[in-house]
Image (cartoon, rainbow, N blue to C red; front, side):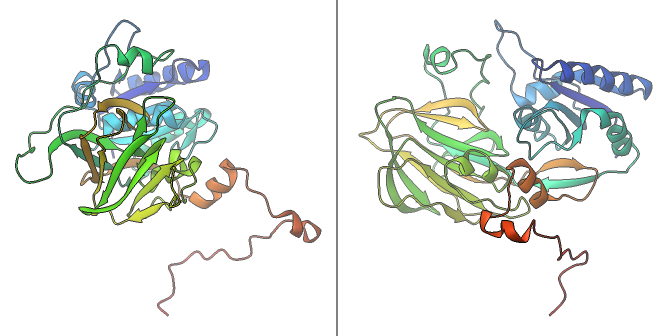
Length: 341
Protein backbone atom coordinates (compact mmCIF):
# COMPACT_ATOMS: atom_id res chain seq x y z
CA UNK A 1 0.00 0.00 0.00
CA UNK A 2 1.76 3.19 -1.12
CA UNK A 3 1.68 5.64 1.79
CA UNK A 4 0.27 9.05 0.87
CA UNK A 5 -0.02 10.61 4.30
CA UNK A 6 1.21 9.51 7.73
CA UNK A 7 -0.02 10.21 11.25
CA UNK A 8 2.40 9.84 14.17
CA UNK A 9 1.52 9.01 17.79
CA UNK A 10 4.49 9.29 20.17
CA UNK A 11 4.93 8.35 23.84
CA UNK A 12 6.61 11.63 24.79
CA UNK A 13 7.79 10.24 28.13
CA UNK A 14 10.24 7.86 26.44
CA UNK A 15 13.39 9.36 24.93
CA UNK A 16 13.78 6.47 22.50
CA UNK A 17 10.26 7.06 21.19
CA UNK A 18 11.00 10.76 20.67
CA UNK A 19 14.27 9.90 18.90
CA UNK A 20 12.59 7.33 16.66
CA UNK A 21 9.86 9.85 15.78
CA UNK A 22 12.61 11.98 14.22
CA UNK A 23 13.63 8.99 12.07
CA UNK A 24 10.03 8.54 10.89
CA UNK A 25 9.72 12.23 10.00
CA UNK A 26 12.99 12.12 8.04
CA UNK A 27 11.83 9.03 6.13
CA UNK A 28 8.53 10.71 5.27
CA UNK A 29 10.36 13.85 4.13
CA UNK A 30 12.65 11.88 1.81
CA UNK A 31 9.63 10.23 0.18
CA UNK A 32 7.55 13.40 -0.11
CA UNK A 33 4.94 12.04 2.33
CA UNK A 34 3.07 14.37 4.65
CA UNK A 35 3.62 13.54 8.34
CA UNK A 36 1.58 15.01 11.19
CA UNK A 37 1.79 14.36 14.94
CA UNK A 38 -1.64 13.33 16.24
CA UNK A 39 -3.22 12.87 19.68
CA UNK A 40 -0.96 15.60 21.06
CA UNK A 41 -2.21 17.71 23.96
CA UNK A 42 -1.06 20.03 26.70
CA UNK A 43 -2.13 19.99 30.34
CA UNK A 44 -4.33 23.07 29.89
CA UNK A 45 -5.97 21.93 26.65
CA UNK A 46 -8.81 19.56 25.83
CA UNK A 47 -8.08 16.45 23.79
CA UNK A 48 -9.69 16.01 20.40
CA UNK A 49 -12.03 13.24 19.33
CA UNK A 50 -10.76 10.64 16.86
CA UNK A 51 -12.56 12.27 13.93
CA UNK A 52 -11.18 15.70 14.82
CA UNK A 53 -7.67 14.21 14.98
CA UNK A 54 -8.13 12.72 11.52
CA UNK A 55 -9.15 16.04 10.02
CA UNK A 56 -6.25 17.77 11.78
CA UNK A 57 -3.81 15.23 10.32
CA UNK A 58 -5.24 15.44 6.80
CA UNK A 59 -6.83 11.95 6.89
CA UNK A 60 -3.69 9.76 6.94
CA UNK A 61 -3.80 6.29 5.42
CA UNK A 62 -1.10 5.03 7.82
CA UNK A 63 -0.80 5.71 11.56
CA UNK A 64 2.55 4.90 13.21
CA UNK A 65 2.63 4.54 17.00
CA UNK A 66 5.83 4.74 19.06
CA UNK A 67 5.36 3.23 22.53
CA UNK A 68 3.65 0.22 24.08
CA UNK A 69 0.16 -1.16 23.64
CA UNK A 70 -1.32 1.91 25.37
CA UNK A 71 0.20 4.18 22.73
CA UNK A 72 -0.99 1.78 20.05
CA UNK A 73 -4.57 2.04 21.35
CA UNK A 74 -4.33 5.83 21.11
CA UNK A 75 -3.46 5.50 17.44
CA UNK A 76 -6.02 2.78 16.84
CA UNK A 77 -8.97 4.89 18.02
CA UNK A 78 -8.04 7.47 15.38
CA UNK A 79 -7.14 5.08 12.56
CA UNK A 80 -10.41 3.16 12.91
CA UNK A 81 -12.40 6.25 11.93
CA UNK A 82 -11.32 6.07 8.28
CA UNK A 83 -9.88 2.54 7.88
CA UNK A 84 -6.27 3.71 8.08
CA UNK A 85 -3.69 1.00 8.74
CA UNK A 86 -1.73 1.05 12.01
CA UNK A 87 1.96 0.16 12.43
CA UNK A 88 3.02 -0.26 16.06
CA UNK A 89 6.67 0.32 16.98
CA UNK A 90 7.42 -1.50 20.23
CA UNK A 91 8.75 0.13 23.39
CA UNK A 92 6.42 -1.64 25.81
CA UNK A 93 6.82 -4.45 28.34
CA UNK A 94 3.89 -6.76 27.58
CA UNK A 95 3.03 -5.89 23.99
CA UNK A 96 0.63 -7.95 21.88
CA UNK A 97 -0.26 -5.24 19.37
CA UNK A 98 3.02 -3.60 18.41
CA UNK A 99 4.95 -5.08 15.49
CA UNK A 100 8.54 -3.86 15.09
CA UNK A 101 11.48 -2.67 17.17
CA UNK A 102 12.68 0.93 16.94
CA UNK A 103 15.84 -0.07 15.10
CA UNK A 104 13.75 -1.61 12.30
CA UNK A 105 11.33 1.27 11.76
CA UNK A 106 12.78 2.49 8.44
CA UNK A 107 12.82 -1.01 6.98
CA UNK A 108 9.23 -1.47 8.15
CA UNK A 109 8.09 1.77 6.54
CA UNK A 110 9.81 0.80 3.28
CA UNK A 111 8.04 -2.57 3.35
CA UNK A 112 4.65 -0.92 3.88
CA UNK A 113 5.25 1.72 1.21
CA UNK A 114 6.42 -0.77 -1.42
CA UNK A 115 3.89 -3.53 -0.81
CA UNK A 116 6.02 -5.85 1.33
CA UNK A 117 3.61 -5.92 4.27
CA UNK A 118 0.24 -7.55 4.87
CA UNK A 119 -2.84 -6.22 6.63
CA UNK A 120 -4.40 -8.18 9.49
CA UNK A 121 -7.95 -7.23 10.46
CA UNK A 122 -9.15 -7.30 14.07
CA UNK A 123 -12.68 -7.27 15.42
CA UNK A 124 -13.79 -4.13 17.26
CA UNK A 125 -16.72 -3.19 19.49
CA UNK A 126 -19.16 -0.33 19.34
CA UNK A 127 -22.02 0.63 21.62
CA UNK A 128 -25.34 2.34 22.19
CA UNK A 129 -26.75 3.80 25.37
CA UNK A 130 -29.95 4.98 26.98
CA UNK A 131 -28.64 8.56 26.66
CA UNK A 132 -25.50 10.37 25.45
CA UNK A 133 -22.55 9.85 27.79
CA UNK A 134 -21.28 12.70 29.92
CA UNK A 135 -18.88 13.24 32.81
CA UNK A 136 -20.31 15.29 35.69
CA UNK A 137 -18.56 18.57 36.43
CA UNK A 138 -15.65 18.16 38.85
CA UNK A 139 -15.57 14.38 38.60
CA UNK A 140 -13.04 14.19 35.75
CA UNK A 141 -10.23 15.83 37.71
CA UNK A 142 -10.84 13.46 40.63
CA UNK A 143 -10.93 10.31 38.50
CA UNK A 144 -7.90 11.27 36.41
CA UNK A 145 -5.70 12.71 39.15
CA UNK A 146 -2.07 12.60 38.02
CA UNK A 147 -2.95 11.87 34.38
CA UNK A 148 -3.22 14.02 31.29
CA UNK A 149 -6.51 15.44 29.99
CA UNK A 150 -9.16 12.88 29.14
CA UNK A 151 -10.92 12.28 25.87
CA UNK A 152 -14.30 13.98 25.43
CA UNK A 153 -17.43 11.84 25.79
CA UNK A 154 -18.25 10.07 22.50
CA UNK A 155 -20.51 11.94 20.11
CA UNK A 156 -23.87 10.64 18.88
CA UNK A 157 -23.76 8.92 15.48
CA UNK A 158 -26.24 10.12 12.84
CA UNK A 159 -27.84 6.66 12.48
CA UNK A 160 -29.21 6.92 16.02
CA UNK A 161 -32.96 6.27 16.06
CA UNK A 162 -35.69 6.46 18.65
CA UNK A 163 -38.23 3.80 19.46
CA UNK A 164 -36.39 0.73 18.14
CA UNK A 165 -35.10 -0.38 21.55
CA UNK A 166 -31.45 0.11 20.64
CA UNK A 167 -31.03 3.56 22.17
CA UNK A 168 -28.56 6.28 21.21
CA UNK A 169 -25.80 5.27 18.79
CA UNK A 170 -22.41 6.46 20.07
CA UNK A 171 -19.28 7.10 18.03
CA UNK A 172 -17.22 4.38 19.72
CA UNK A 173 -14.68 1.92 18.33
CA UNK A 174 -13.05 -0.26 21.00
CA UNK A 175 -10.22 -2.59 20.05
CA UNK A 176 -9.74 -4.06 23.54
CA UNK A 177 -12.75 -3.56 25.77
CA UNK A 178 -15.63 -1.58 27.20
CA UNK A 179 -15.64 -1.56 31.01
CA UNK A 180 -18.34 -0.53 33.47
CA UNK A 181 -16.87 -0.07 36.95
CA UNK A 182 -17.70 1.26 40.39
CA UNK A 183 -16.95 4.84 41.40
CA UNK A 184 -17.15 4.55 45.17
CA UNK A 185 -14.37 2.63 46.92
CA UNK A 186 -16.73 1.15 49.52
CA UNK A 187 -19.54 0.18 47.13
CA UNK A 188 -19.71 -2.30 44.29
CA UNK A 189 -21.68 -1.48 41.17
CA UNK A 190 -24.98 -3.38 40.80
CA UNK A 191 -25.82 -4.35 37.23
CA UNK A 192 -28.33 -6.34 35.27
CA UNK A 193 -26.52 -8.16 32.45
CA UNK A 194 -28.46 -9.07 29.31
CA UNK A 195 -27.29 -11.27 26.41
CA UNK A 196 -29.23 -10.93 23.17
CA UNK A 197 -31.99 -9.14 25.05
CA UNK A 198 -32.40 -11.84 27.73
CA UNK A 199 -31.45 -11.31 31.36
CA UNK A 200 -28.46 -13.50 32.25
CA UNK A 201 -27.97 -12.40 35.86
CA UNK A 202 -27.73 -9.44 38.19
CA UNK A 203 -24.20 -8.77 39.38
CA UNK A 204 -22.72 -6.89 42.31
CA UNK A 205 -19.07 -6.42 41.32
CA UNK A 206 -16.13 -4.05 41.17
CA UNK A 207 -16.52 -3.95 37.40
CA UNK A 208 -17.65 -5.91 34.36
CA UNK A 209 -15.61 -6.15 31.17
CA UNK A 210 -16.87 -6.65 27.62
CA UNK A 211 -13.82 -7.50 25.51
CA UNK A 212 -12.82 -8.51 22.00
CA UNK A 213 -10.52 -11.48 21.36
CA UNK A 214 -7.71 -8.92 21.03
CA UNK A 215 -8.63 -7.55 24.46
CA UNK A 216 -8.74 -11.02 26.01
CA UNK A 217 -5.03 -10.65 26.90
CA UNK A 218 -5.59 -7.28 28.61
CA UNK A 219 -7.88 -6.39 31.57
CA UNK A 220 -10.12 -9.41 30.98
CA UNK A 221 -7.12 -11.74 31.36
CA UNK A 222 -6.05 -9.99 34.57
CA UNK A 223 -9.59 -10.56 35.91
CA UNK A 224 -9.41 -14.29 35.22
CA UNK A 225 -10.89 -14.41 31.73
CA UNK A 226 -9.76 -16.79 28.97
CA UNK A 227 -7.24 -16.06 26.23
CA UNK A 228 -8.77 -16.13 22.75
CA UNK A 229 -6.94 -16.18 19.45
CA UNK A 230 -7.20 -12.71 17.85
CA UNK A 231 -8.57 -14.37 14.72
CA UNK A 232 -11.63 -15.54 16.71
CA UNK A 233 -14.99 -13.84 16.23
CA UNK A 234 -16.46 -13.50 19.72
CA UNK A 235 -17.35 -11.15 22.57
CA UNK A 236 -15.96 -11.94 26.02
CA UNK A 237 -17.91 -10.93 29.16
CA UNK A 238 -15.89 -11.09 32.41
CA UNK A 239 -17.03 -9.88 35.87
CA UNK A 240 -14.39 -8.40 38.20
CA UNK A 241 -14.62 -9.50 41.87
CA UNK A 242 -18.34 -10.34 41.72
CA UNK A 243 -20.09 -10.83 45.06
CA UNK A 244 -21.92 -13.96 43.92
CA UNK A 245 -21.28 -17.64 43.31
CA UNK A 246 -21.35 -17.41 39.51
CA UNK A 247 -18.10 -15.67 38.60
CA UNK A 248 -17.37 -17.24 35.22
CA UNK A 249 -16.61 -15.59 31.91
CA UNK A 250 -19.20 -15.91 29.15
CA UNK A 251 -18.08 -16.03 25.51
CA UNK A 252 -20.80 -14.82 23.14
CA UNK A 253 -21.10 -14.60 19.37
CA UNK A 254 -20.14 -11.25 17.77
CA UNK A 255 -23.76 -10.49 16.85
CA UNK A 256 -25.05 -11.22 20.36
CA UNK A 257 -25.25 -7.84 22.05
CA UNK A 258 -24.40 -7.51 25.74
CA UNK A 259 -26.55 -5.04 27.68
CA UNK A 260 -25.45 -3.60 31.03
CA UNK A 261 -28.07 -1.78 33.12
CA UNK A 262 -27.20 0.07 36.33
CA UNK A 263 -29.76 -1.12 38.87
CA UNK A 264 -31.82 1.37 40.92
CA UNK A 265 -30.06 0.62 44.22
CA UNK A 266 -26.55 0.95 42.72
CA UNK A 267 -24.28 3.94 42.85
CA UNK A 268 -22.95 5.61 39.73
CA UNK A 269 -20.77 3.66 37.30
CA UNK A 270 -17.90 4.82 35.10
CA UNK A 271 -17.71 3.80 31.44
CA UNK A 272 -14.18 3.24 30.11
CA UNK A 273 -13.35 2.44 26.50
CA UNK A 274 -9.92 0.92 25.87
CA UNK A 275 -8.82 2.22 29.27
CA UNK A 276 -10.08 5.78 28.75
CA UNK A 277 -12.85 7.22 30.94
CA UNK A 278 -15.63 8.35 28.58
CA UNK A 279 -18.72 8.80 30.73
CA UNK A 280 -20.62 8.17 33.96
CA UNK A 281 -23.94 6.34 34.24
CA UNK A 282 -26.62 6.90 36.88
CA UNK A 283 -28.95 4.23 38.29
CA UNK A 284 -31.43 3.26 35.59
CA UNK A 285 -29.04 4.05 32.71
CA UNK A 286 -27.81 1.32 30.40
CA UNK A 287 -25.36 0.61 27.59
CA UNK A 288 -25.42 -2.07 24.88
CA UNK A 289 -22.13 -3.39 23.48
CA UNK A 290 -21.84 -5.43 20.29
CA UNK A 291 -19.48 -6.28 17.45
CA UNK A 292 -18.82 -3.32 15.15
CA UNK A 293 -18.96 -3.60 11.35
CA UNK A 294 -15.68 -1.65 11.20
CA UNK A 295 -12.42 -3.59 11.57
CA UNK A 296 -9.05 -2.30 12.67
CA UNK A 297 -6.33 -2.83 10.06
CA UNK A 298 -2.97 -3.83 11.58
CA UNK A 299 0.24 -3.81 9.55
CA UNK A 300 2.10 -7.11 9.74
CA UNK A 301 5.56 -7.67 8.22
CA UNK A 302 5.59 -11.42 8.79
CA UNK A 303 3.07 -14.16 9.65
CA UNK A 304 1.63 -13.62 13.12
CA UNK A 305 2.93 -16.01 15.79
CA UNK A 306 0.34 -15.20 18.46
CA UNK A 307 1.11 -18.23 20.63
CA UNK A 308 4.85 -17.68 20.46
CA UNK A 309 4.29 -14.09 21.51
CA UNK A 310 1.99 -15.30 24.29
CA UNK A 311 4.75 -17.56 25.59
CA UNK A 312 7.37 -14.79 25.40
CA UNK A 313 5.28 -11.97 26.85
CA UNK A 314 4.02 -13.97 29.82
CA UNK A 315 7.34 -15.79 30.27
CA UNK A 316 5.66 -19.19 30.19
CA UNK A 317 7.87 -22.09 31.22
CA UNK A 318 7.49 -25.82 31.25
CA UNK A 319 6.07 -27.47 34.39
CA UNK A 320 8.73 -28.20 37.08
CA UNK A 321 7.70 -31.87 37.06
CA UNK A 322 9.09 -32.20 33.54
CA UNK A 323 12.45 -30.66 34.49
CA UNK A 324 14.21 -34.02 34.50
CA UNK A 325 13.30 -34.44 30.84
CA UNK A 326 14.55 -30.97 29.84
CA UNK A 327 12.72 -28.34 27.79
CA UNK A 328 9.97 -29.46 25.43
CA UNK A 329 11.01 -29.71 21.79
CA UNK A 330 9.10 -27.96 19.01
CA UNK A 331 8.36 -31.29 17.36
CA UNK A 332 5.00 -30.54 15.72
CA UNK A 333 5.05 -27.50 13.46
CA UNK A 334 2.73 -28.01 10.48
CA UNK A 335 3.22 -25.38 7.78
CA UNK A 336 0.26 -26.20 5.53
CA UNK A 337 -3.52 -25.88 6.01
CA UNK A 338 -5.41 -28.51 8.01
CA UNK A 339 -5.80 -31.69 5.89
CA UNK A 340 -9.29 -32.28 4.46
CA UNK A 341 -9.82 -35.34 6.69
